[in-house]
Length: 315
Image (cartoon, rainbow, N blue to C red; front, side, top):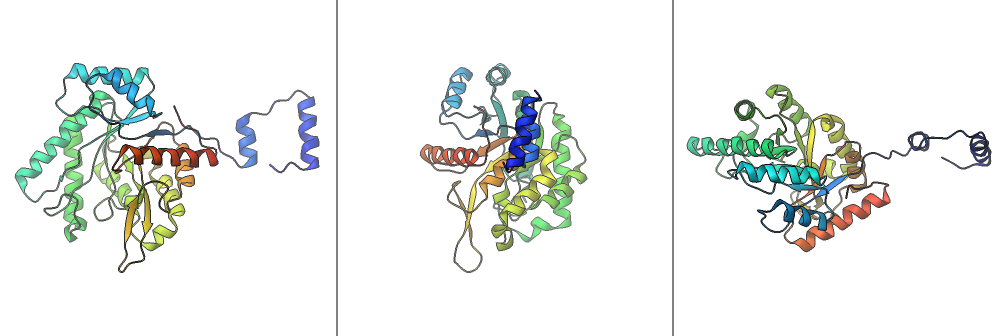
């Protein structure tokens, strides 16, 4: 709001009359949007059998979201203790990751991989994670590789059938199954994600956002601000967890894009955080860094960027 002489007199008159203006109204008038505090999280070093020690480690790093601390096959009592301790300390378990090829050309391996997804979705539901996440898979030997078959109509149908099978077998109550977008397999854009959500037709199938993984052209790279907004506009109602990375374009032929630590690329983190803050309790998770020092630098950058744009964080 421009504090002109007229506005100053008007505000003084209102105050003198004993009329209070809510912060929400002030934000609306001034064009600012307070939003919700963002839940930042990242991998926590160490393996934990004691949920109290795990909570201490998470809180020492000032995170309010965390990756799933146990693996499928853990005792139900241990899983329950982690779930209860997380809830007691206001820590959200963001996701349980699978990371295998649900479309493996070897049918035996494919069945084993699907079974791992069923087990991990069951774990995510039992521990109260926001989601279980995997990639859709690749039609070749490399589990996340670029193959022409990744975009075949038959592949789309296989993904739909596989996701339905996993969800129907587990029938989760607390959590959702999600697919992380990738640059050369489905879903590779907000629109293809929406197509999959509609085709799967299961309320426990939701969305996982990684905008960097979908920036696969100079157009998206140089207008990543607009692309981030498009992602949230289309996928916002379905989002359960977010991966936060950065990206840079290299002066090499042909097109060469590289992942970077947050702050070392060109992703518009101000808009990224602002759009995230419009959603309540959606984990904003750092990943793919090689050392704890790098995670601390990434978290520092994210928090400093948030401070510059009026974004608060849950601690």
